[in-house]
Length: 145
Image (cartoon, rainbow, N blue to C red; front, side, top):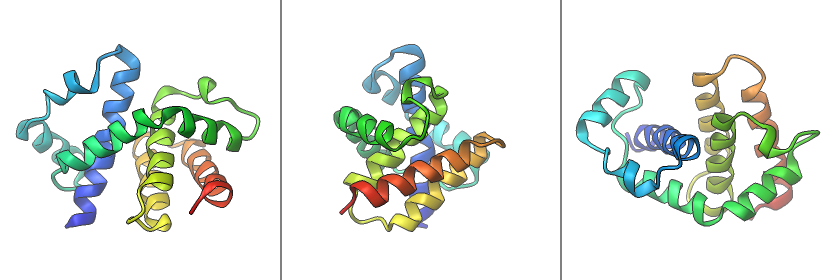
Protein backbone atom coordinates (compact mmCIF):
# COMPACT_ATOMS: atom_id res chain seq x y z
CA UNK A 1 0.00 0.00 0.00
CA UNK A 2 2.83 2.41 0.77
CA UNK A 3 4.15 2.29 -2.76
CA UNK A 4 0.75 3.04 -4.27
CA UNK A 5 0.41 6.07 -1.96
CA UNK A 6 3.82 7.22 -3.15
CA UNK A 7 2.87 6.51 -6.78
CA UNK A 8 -0.26 8.57 -6.43
CA UNK A 9 1.67 11.28 -4.57
CA UNK A 10 4.23 11.47 -7.39
CA UNK A 11 1.50 11.88 -9.99
CA UNK A 12 -0.18 14.58 -7.94
CA UNK A 13 3.14 16.40 -7.33
CA UNK A 14 3.86 16.45 -11.08
CA UNK A 15 0.42 17.87 -11.77
CA UNK A 16 0.97 20.59 -9.15
CA UNK A 17 4.39 21.55 -10.52
CA UNK A 18 2.92 21.61 -14.03
CA UNK A 19 0.04 23.83 -12.92
CA UNK A 20 2.42 26.15 -11.08
CA UNK A 21 4.45 26.62 -14.25
CA UNK A 22 1.39 27.12 -16.45
CA UNK A 23 -0.51 29.63 -14.36
CA UNK A 24 2.08 31.02 -11.97
CA UNK A 25 0.17 30.06 -8.84
CA UNK A 26 2.13 29.27 -5.70
CA UNK A 27 2.26 25.85 -4.11
CA UNK A 28 0.36 27.25 -1.13
CA UNK A 29 -2.54 28.42 -3.36
CA UNK A 30 -2.74 25.07 -5.15
CA UNK A 31 -2.31 23.17 -1.88
CA UNK A 32 -5.54 24.72 -0.58
CA UNK A 33 -7.36 22.58 -3.12
CA UNK A 34 -5.97 19.42 -1.51
CA UNK A 35 -9.10 17.80 -0.28
CA UNK A 36 -10.34 14.30 0.17
CA UNK A 37 -12.67 14.93 -2.79
CA UNK A 38 -9.80 15.82 -5.12
CA UNK A 39 -7.88 12.78 -3.89
CA UNK A 40 -10.88 10.53 -4.50
CA UNK A 41 -11.12 11.90 -8.05
CA UNK A 42 -7.43 11.26 -8.61
CA UNK A 43 -7.76 7.74 -7.23
CA UNK A 44 -10.53 7.02 -9.75
CA UNK A 45 -8.37 8.28 -12.61
CA UNK A 46 -5.09 6.56 -11.83
CA UNK A 47 -6.02 3.57 -9.64
CA UNK A 48 -2.98 4.27 -7.48
CA UNK A 49 -4.53 4.74 -4.07
CA UNK A 50 -4.92 7.87 -1.99
CA UNK A 51 -1.97 10.28 -2.17
CA UNK A 52 0.09 11.19 0.88
CA UNK A 53 -0.12 14.97 1.39
CA UNK A 54 3.20 15.24 3.19
CA UNK A 55 5.02 13.29 0.44
CA UNK A 56 3.46 15.54 -2.23
CA UNK A 57 4.67 18.56 -0.29
CA UNK A 58 8.15 17.04 0.15
CA UNK A 59 8.45 16.41 -3.61
CA UNK A 60 7.11 19.78 -4.76
CA UNK A 61 8.88 21.95 -2.19
CA UNK A 62 12.10 19.95 -2.48
CA UNK A 63 12.06 20.31 -6.25
CA UNK A 64 11.41 24.06 -6.02
CA UNK A 65 14.07 24.62 -3.34
CA UNK A 66 16.66 22.73 -5.41
CA UNK A 67 15.41 23.73 -8.86
CA UNK A 68 18.62 25.37 -10.06
CA UNK A 69 20.73 22.31 -9.23
CA UNK A 70 18.04 19.95 -10.59
CA UNK A 71 17.71 21.96 -13.83
CA UNK A 72 21.51 22.09 -14.23
CA UNK A 73 21.70 18.29 -13.81
CA UNK A 74 18.92 17.76 -16.35
CA UNK A 75 20.50 20.15 -18.86
CA UNK A 76 23.92 18.48 -18.49
CA UNK A 77 22.34 15.10 -19.20
CA UNK A 78 20.00 16.02 -22.04
CA UNK A 79 21.38 15.08 -25.43
CA UNK A 80 20.86 17.80 -28.07
CA UNK A 81 18.10 19.50 -26.07
CA UNK A 82 17.66 22.25 -23.54
CA UNK A 83 15.20 21.87 -20.69
CA UNK A 84 13.53 25.15 -21.68
CA UNK A 85 12.57 23.65 -25.08
CA UNK A 86 10.91 20.58 -23.59
CA UNK A 87 7.13 20.45 -23.17
CA UNK A 88 6.19 21.70 -19.70
CA UNK A 89 4.57 18.46 -18.46
CA UNK A 90 7.71 16.51 -19.42
CA UNK A 91 9.77 19.20 -17.72
CA UNK A 92 7.71 18.74 -14.53
CA UNK A 93 8.20 14.96 -14.64
CA UNK A 94 11.94 15.38 -15.17
CA UNK A 95 12.32 17.91 -12.38
CA UNK A 96 10.51 15.87 -9.74
CA UNK A 97 12.07 12.57 -10.80
CA UNK A 98 15.60 14.00 -10.74
CA UNK A 99 14.91 15.67 -7.39
CA UNK A 100 13.74 12.34 -5.94
CA UNK A 101 16.68 10.49 -7.49
CA UNK A 102 19.25 12.89 -6.00
CA UNK A 103 17.72 14.01 -2.71
CA UNK A 104 15.47 11.19 -1.44
CA UNK A 105 17.69 8.43 -0.10
CA UNK A 106 15.16 5.84 1.02
CA UNK A 107 13.74 4.99 -2.42
CA UNK A 108 15.60 2.48 -4.62
CA UNK A 109 16.79 3.95 -7.91
CA UNK A 110 15.00 1.21 -9.84
CA UNK A 111 11.68 2.19 -8.23
CA UNK A 112 12.17 5.84 -9.15
CA UNK A 113 12.93 4.95 -12.76
CA UNK A 114 9.92 2.66 -13.02
CA UNK A 115 7.51 5.08 -11.35
CA UNK A 116 8.34 8.09 -13.51
CA UNK A 117 8.53 6.13 -16.76
CA UNK A 118 5.06 4.73 -15.97
CA UNK A 119 3.79 8.24 -15.21
CA UNK A 120 5.19 9.43 -18.54
CA UNK A 121 3.41 6.53 -20.28
CA UNK A 122 0.19 7.58 -18.52
CA UNK A 123 0.39 10.99 -20.27
CA UNK A 124 2.32 10.25 -23.47
CA UNK A 125 2.54 7.51 -26.07
CA UNK A 126 5.50 8.93 -27.99
CA UNK A 127 9.19 9.31 -27.17
CA UNK A 128 8.67 11.06 -23.82
CA UNK A 129 9.01 7.94 -21.60
CA UNK A 130 12.28 7.08 -23.38
CA UNK A 131 13.55 10.63 -22.88
CA UNK A 132 12.77 10.46 -19.16
CA UNK A 133 14.48 7.07 -18.90
CA UNK A 134 17.57 8.37 -20.72
CA UNK A 135 17.87 11.46 -18.52
CA UNK A 136 17.35 9.50 -15.29
CA UNK A 137 19.89 6.94 -16.44
CA UNK A 138 22.47 9.62 -17.26
CA UNK A 139 21.87 11.51 -14.01
CA UNK A 140 22.07 8.33 -11.94
CA UNK A 141 25.43 7.46 -13.52
CA UNK A 142 26.89 10.97 -13.39
CA UNK A 143 25.57 12.57 -10.24
CA UNK A 144 24.50 10.08 -7.59
CA UNK A 145 25.28 8.83 -4.18
